[in-house]
Length: 438
Image (cartoon, rainbow, N blue to C red; front, side):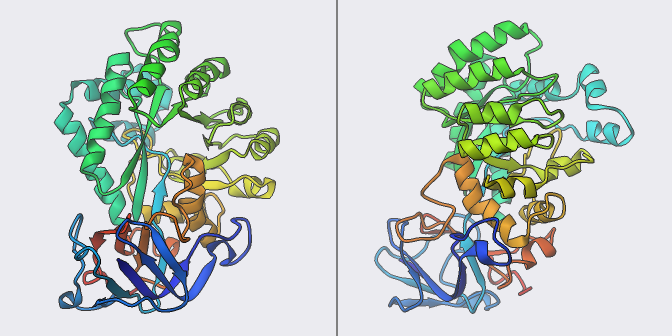
């Protein structure tokens, strides 16, 4: 058992669109107890007896009984580890609901070309874009791809992420997409985060296949096989001019839903193409990007209960003049999540604190709403009802931060403030002797 005492506990049980700290559902001088099965068994004020005391953030290295770094021991089964948080903030483990982090290759040159004025289409026509990553990923060894994915997950975990969604999409053949899904599963075995694999079959058209043939292969072969083999939990498609049409995406996601996969949709990123309306009609768990979503699309998402996953770092990385704004979604009653969109071409930043800052500065969320978006909101976007909030019976995924003030996290951006990361009752990361108090 692990018990955290004297913490400022953010349960994330408030309403996201409320003002101030209300979305956080704060318990002052609170306590959280996680049993040996990794479940929260107590949350609130009070005392849970234990046998071993561990100091909170700012203590000396010799005071720690829990592990430093990833994957260390958490004490003997049955013996309680008591951690005095000394008033520091505790939240659920963060959930990253939108990544493309399994890939090979480097597209820094393309980034420089865009900064020099070349368009994404010009770069793609010259052999860059998704096609260049597909070529590099196909050529990479399994080991190279697994190690690269794990290193990116490690960096996310150091920021407090305990669950990460990972999409395929850089294989663009039935065999290669199934390979990537297998490698996502393999990477998860040594990762510090839980991994949610998503099939992104309609990401781009393969160079060696015509468009109609690829869509048919995704619908009739790839999606049923990925589901039959248990390689994916979700399915996704890129609905956009220059990518795939509403009808093509509808066919792919409907095939996924028939096979038992959770549907998601890249929607309305570059044009107001009714992607949000499509996501709502298919009862997608999430619609992602949404920079150009109309009032009608927003209302449709609200009626369907589909979460809006905003990706402000991607908008910043691409110098998008119109990043998606949270206010309209919140006003309509749409739950808002924040995702990093980590990928090799259009968003290469791997910082949780920068994502929180972008959620506030670019998408218009308050600090409390941004934290809700990275926990409860992201859980909604992935349909994970066992995490994202702190309550008895839920998973013991939580972060002890080196601050008591939730507003400090997006304010002091570029620095990862996680002092202790616990996943399913196991200490994954303990940096309490290395992080100064903020």
